Image (tube, rainbow, N blue to C red; front, side, top):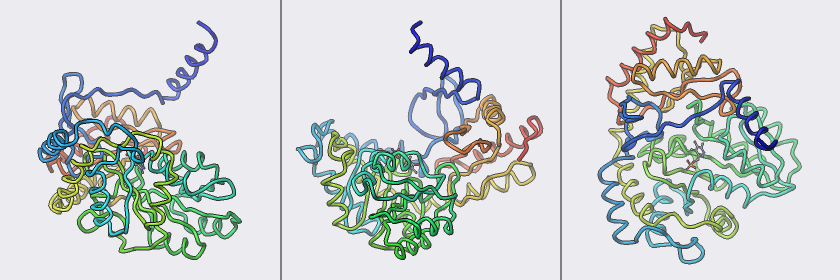
Length: 392
Ligand SMILES: *Cc1c(COP(=O)(O)O)cnc(C)c1O
């Protein structure tokens, strides 16, 4: 083998030795609590389909209708001829829903984060980022070439010190609104206040809050009762919304600058219009989903009480992300493997996705789960606690 390939083989061996090698499941059929993998059926707590909309018949129908109206591909980027009526209508509906003046669609949340930070900041500017932020926010800061300051998770005093010490021309605080591997929330009110005092932008990545938090699932801003022209709100549409895509909402001037300058918006084919069309239906379903959101809250409470008698520790979370802290990579993998042997899928999350020594099971609840599903998970975890002697 030539040496370049040998190096790659050594890289992979390194991952294997550390228990960090990842493999994919190949799923058959739609995303729902019962999924088929390699011909076997499992009860899954893995998806971000919090409201259970990913296979909703109204969305399937809307995709059919969208295809009939718009065909399949957008055919061009938004600034050429790829911007269709469905995109335009969806942008106004999204902006209105989250209570902000204007919105811009992106193909993915990852691209939206890259787009926002790289369009607004360059050298001589600074990004202030929670240490547990999603990878896309970190990558976005690197791409922008702004200085990157990371502060301890939710540590507002550290953030304030960093903001006060910075001489950057333009400052932007970037944070997950709901932390994707922990399920806890950013203190939005304090963040807005800090940003006001230090003249900084606040980018709130609400990938896990849009559709779930606040009245009508309007997201973290509605949940916190906060509004500010400094906020750059980012919602994703492949999680609770059950489809695909993302949007950024905020002041009209901000959105216009993104439209003019965000490279992941400009230099890419527009989202298929049939997806935008289906998302308009998804937004209606989200608005009517109070019962689903209430059911989600009940499931989280159920899980907590089901685990009460055992030694497992759930991280404190009021969201459908309910991580169970394990610690070591091998222990987390073993627990995930044993659950799988009992017909239950819960992913083990390891570094670098989470800090070393905090490997965990990321239990994701969906409104499509039943209370019995959650009881079954709880009972299996208690049974395994006896077998595996958790440290938690
Ligand atoms: C999932 C996620 C993203 C990326 O969104 P996609 O639309 O899946 O690319 C961005 N930020 C956070 C916090 C996420 O959890």
